[in-house]
Length: 252
Image (tube, rainbow, N blue to C red; front, side, top):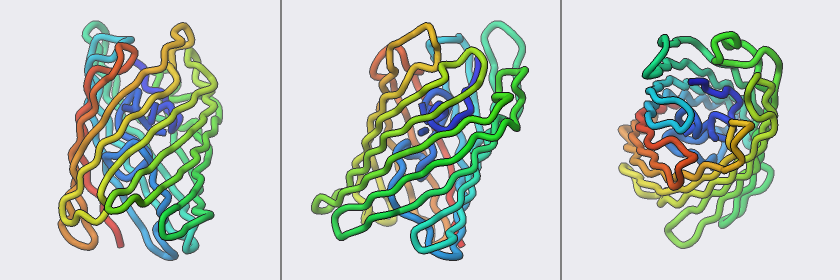
C-alpha cells in the first residue's frame, strides 16, 4: 500500500493533500481549501489524523498524521509547511511506518469582496520521505491549487481546481483534482459542511477518476482552538471505501 506524497495526490488524499491517503490541505477536516489567509504575524497549526480502509488497490488499513503550520507574512499571503507520517498495514505483507515528503507552499489571496474571494496555493514537494518503502519520492515535485469562494446568503461555497506533478515511481506523474464544499461559516460554535471531490487515479494503469463525498463537524472551543471530526465515503469503486478523520487547530 503506497501513499502518494504530493499534496493533490494526497488530497487525491481521502487533499489537493488528500483523498487517496487521508485528509486534505484545507482547514481540517475539509478537502476543499478556502481563500482565507491568516493575517500578518498570525500562526495556525493544524493537527489532522485519518484512518482509511477499503482502498481499491490493496486490502488493508492505513492511518496517517498530517501536521500543517501556516504563518501569515502579509495580510493576504501565508507560508505553509505540511508534514506526513503514515502507518500502512496490508492484510498480507509487513507493516510500514514512516514519514512522507515535506510540502512547502505559498498561499496568495489576490481578490476579496463582500461576496467573492479568489486565491492560489502552490509549492514544492521536497523528497524527504522514505522512497524505497513507497512513502515518498526521490525527486522534487510541485503542485498548484486554484481557490474560489462565494457567499450566497447565509452559506459559503468553496471550489478548487488543482494540479500536481509527482515523480514517485509507479505513480501517474500528472494529477488533477476538482472539489466543491458548502458550509455556513457563521455557525459558531458548531460548524457543519458537505463536499464532493474527484481526482486523478494515481495508478497509471487505471484511467477512472475516484469520486468521494465528505462531511464533518468543527467545534470552536475558544478563540484559539477548534476540534473536528469527519467522514468520507466513496461514490464509485475507484475510491477508498471509507475514511475517518479527527483533528485540532490551534491559532495564536
